[in-house]
Length: 290
Image (tube, rainbow, N blue to C red; front, side):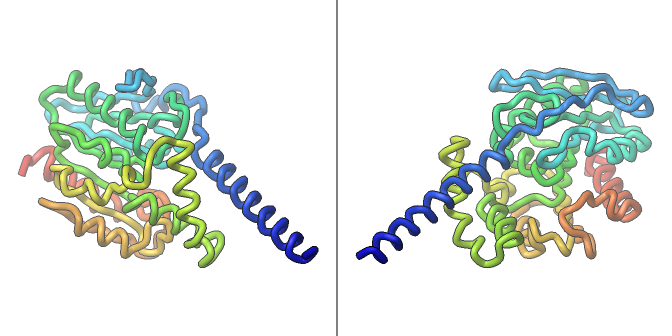
């Protein structure tokens, strides 16, 4: 009997410990990545802007006026980053005479937000940026480059009318797969069993479900030509998942798998190849209009 009580006590202790760890994990993962960003670098010649999202949140960003008629590109950073992560892309595009919009997604940088929601509420920031661009440059075609969280936020936003061209870099297919991949990377096969428990905490703590965070399910309705890019060594979003994302896109689409790249900044990893793939893609749909 004493051994049974000891076993039961140990089991309860393990369950309690796991529950606490799951709650703490969601707390850490969803904690806002707020920070001071400040003014844009002088060479970008950008104006600071403050937008209002549908949820009355503040979205901070930079706007760069390019050559009229040459197109506009919205740049969306990855999770726990801010608009400064997109500076090298901005410089590349500015040299090609595009107008540019860089924003801090909700709960990132200088934008407000109580929690990171992995694309769900970040989509409000994407909508606010589109509204601003369309009011300021009503005759310009709009392209988007979204990295990881930024890509998912764009797809979840379901922008209407749709942009003219979209680059999706290292985007997760579903939050369930994203969570499982990360847990398996850190814990091995046991991560597969823990993933559903962690997703339940997402629903409880963040008020969103795994079904709401499935960008791959929304991709067919994006209504724009798509370039899907990811590294062949990416374990956060596997090559198999990237190919499924590409297959889910409809209309004009391109797939670029960056040999040897993990879940990293693809422009920094392969700058010349990035320029050779992304610039012609954007020009084709923002300038040629085909």
